[in-house]
Length: 439
Image (cartoon, rainbow, N blue to C red):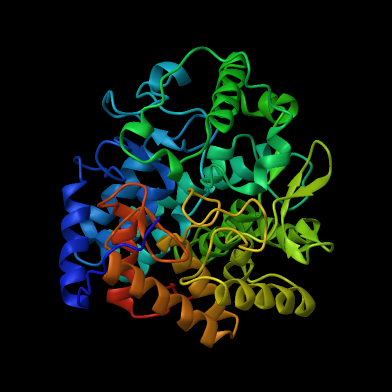
């Protein structure tokens, strides 16, 4: 695939275009990631987009998160998709999930970025009105985090599992390749993939992967989407470094919010979650690869390799000195082999693909978290490199869903909400992004 022609857009123009993308994808109280390819409200997309709105419309930013948490399940889960309106351009739609919710949703969740996004809004809007909105959102997030700790870490190991690759948000990452072999996708009901009508098949998961994805949806549906039963019986139950690190960072944000909002009864609960995770993440360390890696909790085997999710260890503020030294070594090695960082998978691995979804490409919002973590942990040069790479991608190639890590070619959907939101974060705050309320 040849390199795309560079746009060379200046910062002010980028900010105007980013704002136009977010408002253009606004469907009234919620945004879609992009028209056509993703026509519904996605969980972590929506929370990140709220931070983009915060750069120019705080009221609309709060509404984005409020609309998301309004569809929380009775058990505390906030689903990964809310199907506000039927859209024929996406599969699997609400009838395939069949969750029985008043407003249809998917049957599992997504990485819980919303807490540190809500903290950002509270940091900007901490008057009486902002605190009241934050308090209502906090209560929903507290229930959601409890869901993660209860149902996705039933053994209280301090690491959280996913029951579907989609729940990680990193759908076809090599992290899941081995564990997915236990999922039989040969007998799924016939279906038509609609993503390939919008995006080149070279950029998307394969049919074999998709068959297994649908098989897991059918299995969850057969159990009535009971989170406890799925955790016990699902053939795919994999501790995810990305979700684990994001949850730990989100728990830290939730703790700061609890103290600020005087949610005193919740403080010891959150502190226990944090302490458990700070110890538990060592279970994700694969000494043979010298990286944090996915852990199949059915087989106790590590999978994957060095991913951009593993780099979120800096964002979560964990790792021994030796582990951090190894991870920063991986960061420098991988960045030296690509045109732009942070690649979603290690280019030295045979399953690397610079343009195929989560098997190599760069994602701006992942860079935002990684860059913040690097700066917070004292790796300012590396954090600055992430910022400069992100700026170069967006100013050179626009607001694509993701980018080829070698030549910067835009890939996936275009006019993408969370990519635009990432730019607005950088532009409003300056690198590194790090708004927090004071404990």
